[in-house]
Length: 430
Image: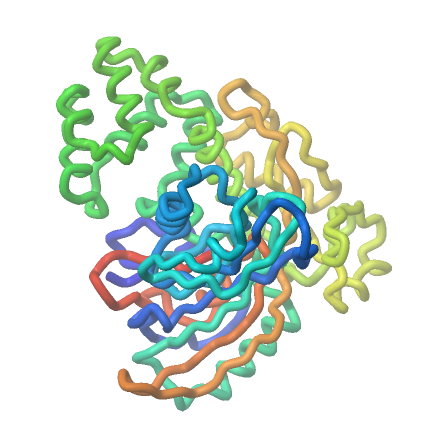
């Protein structure tokens, strides 16, 4: 199924693009080796300590599945294994992990299908989520137009010069594309609407037992719906159990959902609002500063207020700094002037009060995020193998930035993933 099939909600579909580029068709992930991601560590291992760091190459496995297999093989709990980021299942990925009080030789000798340990080192602390500098991508696009290689290379150079719109990618919003809508319902205190989105609203992207479970929820048959939802959906099952036991108490059903998951939904809504602000800023240029901006220093990840845009613009031209957008929250630093007006307009368009993220359902601190990200070591070349000709893209993205934001500038929305018919989102660089 195409990545951006009309059968699947796509919150990015209407967001403006930076380039005026006749985008290419294509297919990705015909093979796992068509999509390779390698983590770039935030710091090198020290060579000593109680933690064993290991570089794992996995093929066709999600990070969570790999963690489970490794934990069983080493006879440890999954939470004891540290990792810096989540990586795609339908790909070849190389990522660092850590485990404490384990003989490096035992880690090196791990023999698990579709995994290889490439390197083992020692360090003094556990690897934690976010402890990476970025990711190196190598992506092959098939069924495209190889004769347009030169145009593609020119487009990459333009993106490297101007920066790539730092949209949160579609995978941030779930397979149904509605995690942000759940977050909005929570933010405005509409617990019933949140439950309806999580447990009901069946659509063409739902199948099998989950589809039937959603249909039964819509009919008010909570106990029957509970029997349909697979065991891995613990939060959905807890909510349905609470609804069944309380004869439909919305409050009990809502609060049966884990707090961390509720915060995830709020985070998705923050991401959606950020994307809307970036879209509003696009006509002005994401590489152009405004008075009142809060600018991001790419070298030190610090944010400062721009008093005089003309004075600071040369630093933006050199890609030292970039304007930021909001991850709304009660402690988020506010811009002034026109940037503040744009952010207020994004809230108003959603009928949100400025204090929407301060209530008990959705209290989050908030932060700032650069509106563009640098594209490094970007190149495109022609290749061919047993499947035929392809265009191969190679590039490096900073941590937290999405490959989809780059690829949507270059390839059409209907670019699809061949294989087993499932929808596969491109991996972000967390």
